[in-house]
Length: 267
Image (cartoon, rainbow, N blue to C red):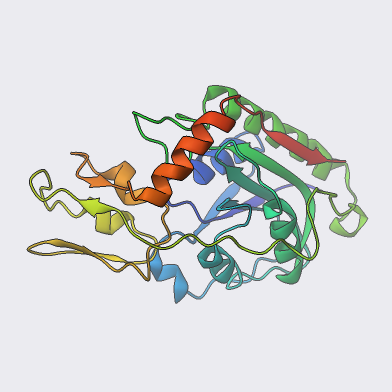
């Protein structure tokens, strides 16, 4: 089989998942690369064309050992027609727990055939300059592994007669999935003395939780604690420092110091 078209489908509030997927596809040498970006709120109402050709690479971050509920809901808007797929999760150097098997099962439900999988490391949503958590990941080392995975995928698909002949990838995880651990949604706050009301925070929010007018307001019930608004703010006016987050930061800083490496699953 020749890979003429690759479709990237991702939910990536802080850009780490997107960066990994772009690293993978960069060495596949497909004639056409399409992107279904599920990060923006508009994707909730978009009508996506059914994918019936080429290879699909699906990616999402890991929040508490699962993919975000918002990501799952948006992935269900994308349908496949027996197309081979790669599932990728990106986690903040703790564990990816059941996220990868969740992605595999979701891909199957949506009509794709998962033939490979990977778990990469990305900068944790709670990472700050004072308390760095896998800061700067994925880095050059990670992207080199992603690019090598792309080469392996190209060879794997080229050696297959058709999609039906490729085996489903085996990945670690539990079925049924572990229960979600939901933290109380207390969103980032804005330092009014520093904020320039540029609107970057609102533009980066995957759930349209932020509005910028005379003040910056955040709807707590919509916030998913992804920290996209914190990381994109050009003047560092947004901070996420609730007691529960500070407790998590301290624990992660102490127990997850040793950098982990990406893991690839491919027969």
